[in-house]
Image (cartoon, rainbow, N blue to C red; front, top):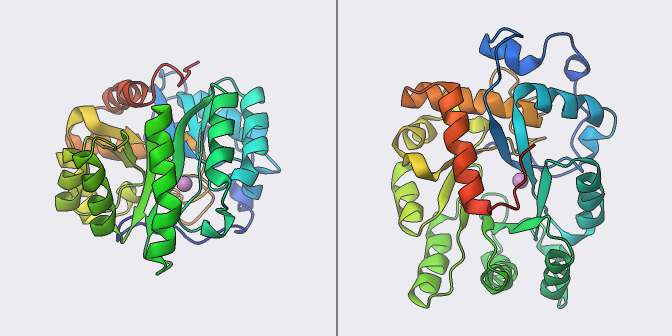
Length: 302
Ligand code: NI
């Protein structure tokens, strides 16, 4: 999201390169310089997509790698209701997986008259649904603001109704998103939530922080030229920062451009730690506590 989020387009995207298939040393430990004996940090990937076809062939290895990297819980995001059965089936297999239900601003063609009711039912049917989203506005890839607002507003209403946090995707759309959220605050009708895959300016971040939102950093914070994101990672209050992968998109350096996976959230935490003068274990503990505060005890760590 924001102007320096390099989300590389919609599904389907290419299969992972061969060098990401089963290796010897766990990638994140190799990247971090941690020996295989060192205890990994405690991490939560607060935003991932695993039902995309990029994980069809090697999901078990991906799971092994995130467990070795210290990822203790994951929040699986949803881009449209047709994904929900597959996400639920994945949650049946993976005790550390929780999920959201929602419609992404670039998936507005999947919003129908009954979609709010479909999302409500899905959330009420399964206590593992702990957020509404991902929802939001994206004026980088589309210009249909009015249609995106038609899809956004009933989801924000639903989050308030169900007292669930929202996962907000906002790309080149900070002004209309702030306007929508401020209006809701004035009427006492704004949900709590997180700005996922943060890529805006420090000024924009301050405005979302004032509305009570959390800021989640993804692989973009590892990109050398992402100076505004670096500044945000230094400035965000300790009790408002989260980390995520948004996998399979946005792999952190040094895997930029390749398939991303939850284990690589360690590289995001390492870069945030470096920018703030903390250890990766400290950032892991802080972001884990923050994720549990925002999403509640339903976010189950193993
Ligand atoms: Ni996402």
